[in-house]
Image (tube, rainbow, N blue to C red; front, side, top):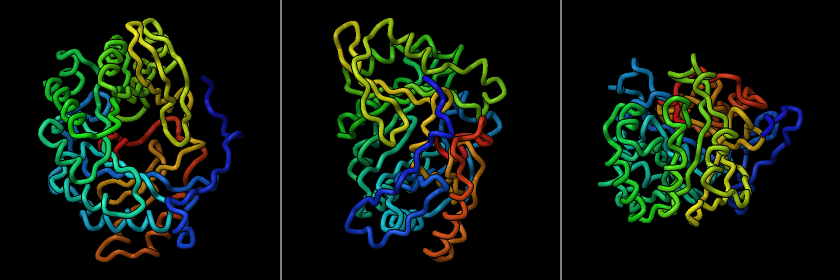
Length: 349
């Protein structure tokens, strides 16, 4: 795979979530015409895990953290849906299940017309007892972090002896009807690159989509990223020892390049590669990231481009929201920077 050239980035046009609302659109675009179709909303920095690639040792679980309220979140999502073409929302963190008002937030977002896809990324530790409640509140699907099936290795990677809880949580999510369920595996050299085929054998009979994510030069492993980084080409070579890659699926705005595969035992599965470093997907990026305190991140690996907080409180100000978003999107680059300045726990993935 060859890195995307800045010179070949196409100009994208914003696509309204619903044609009937097109007359109400005042869509924000960046200089290359990329708009907002997908909101990744971080609910908290808090997380019960301390993954080696994600959360620094010095990052304590926040107390008194400034967070957007459920009503502020609903107002923002409603505005982005009605006026900017938003149709997909993902709840992130930290871990969103650390947010006490999570069920209320899910219910409020699910009630917004035009939100066709409401998803959540989680470490999976609460799913065993909460998956049915999340689904009843309006959550449609879930991504679960799972970097290994070896208990000792899992504990070293996450700081928590919680593998069994995560596996039971996956079963609970399936039983609750959350679908599709995707497993996110960050591949880190010296930690889990030997576990990849085992994860594929686990995912296939359970109809779970497995996504291998390239390590990015941000967070705790940024300083030794070159030694830890495993390119997707190497991941695929390892997987090819136990499976045949049958077909490449249409990508669209999805970050993952997804393949139908057949394992050597005859089982079929869907495997994706998220390749921010070896072959980025910046040209089709329609994501807006908002942190728990209202920070604006048009790009995962760039600096924040302002804050929406002053437009959300003490009262919602739609014109100010639009002005702040336009200012932020003028700073969105054709491609992400070479390294990220923040950690995932601060702004979600």
